[in-house]
Structures are given as structure tokens and as C-alpha cells.
Image 1 (cartoon, rainbow, N blue to C red):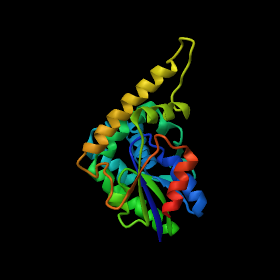
Image 2 (cartoon, one colour):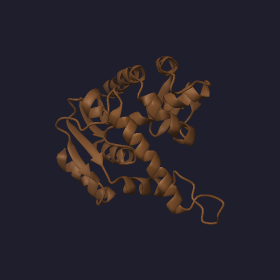
Image 3 (cartoon, rainbow, N blue to C red):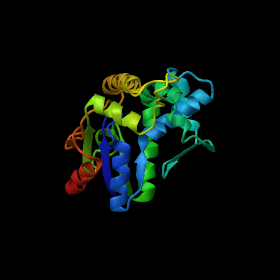
Image 4 (cartoon, helix red, strand yellow):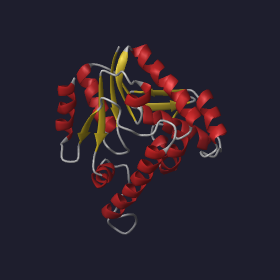
Length: 221
């Protein structure tokens, strides 16, 4: 079973890199972050508090989540757009820090790969916890300011120059603050913190183009 693990902090480019590598290899790609976002979405939709560990764990164990080809369906509802919204942004780190939620989703992630006979899997703990024996483990990093700029440039944050909304610089500053908050939570949580996995190759994409990053991973393979 061929598994490529791509880990890294928020905004480091894991999702786009993982999809490109999967396309090159003829494998499917799993965005595990979307699964945690799906749980956060379901918690909020049920009127729950993301910091209520018991409630979030119960939701994680009972919801039906499908993450496939960029689409995320939660209990029959297409949540692809909603899971990237600001309310889920604020909730997802709390949900992802929940040990019971992580235990449930790790089981689902391994089953996803087993059913497909392999895959390119990206997240925060793929090389350390989910697939420590992956064929190749990549730890993707980039300067926080660059990560924030990329997020805004990808269109994830509304920007206007007419005073009706945030300017580009304000949007980047806001995203940078959120990225710093998520980095702190992800790196210090007790359950599966964001760490470089043993044997992982660190790729700093700060000064690399997307194609150059893809080629580095392909050379590793």
C-alpha cells in the first residue's frame, strides 16, 4: 500500500501540493483537515460548543462524513463551502485538539486509505501518528507572512479597496494573526501536536514556486 504523508502548519500549501502529487502518481488525495472542519461544522450546526469535549467527541463518532474529490458532505449536506467559513475557522482548532475526536478520525483516515490501496494524505499528524511508515514523509513549512499572503491571494478572504471592506494589507494581517493562533494551538496541544515526523524531509516553500515544490517531492519519490 503506497502512502505519501504531507504535514505542515496552516497555510503552508499542503492541500494543493498533495493534490498535485496524487495526480502525478495516479493516487487519490485525502485532506484530513477537511475532516476536522467537518466535525466542527457539525458541532456548530447542532448548536454545540466546540470547547465541549464530550459533545464534540459524540458528534465525531456519529456523523457521516465523505471527503472526496474536493467535496465534503456531512450527514448528507454539502458542506464544502461552509467548512471554510469564519465560524468553522474559529472552531476547528478546538475540535482538533480533542483527543477523542482525533482518535475517531484517525481510524476513519486509515480506513479511507485501506479501501483505496494507498493515497497521498495531508494534515498535521500524518507522518507522526496516522501513517508513521509512509513511503515518503514531507514536512512543509513557509514563513508566516508568506502563508498569510498566499491565503488571501487564493481568494479565501474578501478584500476591497473602496472602504466597504478590508484592504489587502488588513486582510493579510488578519489572516496572519489567525495563522499564528492556529500554529500555537496545533503545536502545543497534548493530542498529536504538530511536529516534524522522524524521517520526514522538511521543504521550506517560502522562496519556491509551486512547480518547484512539486518537483522536490517527486524527486524524493
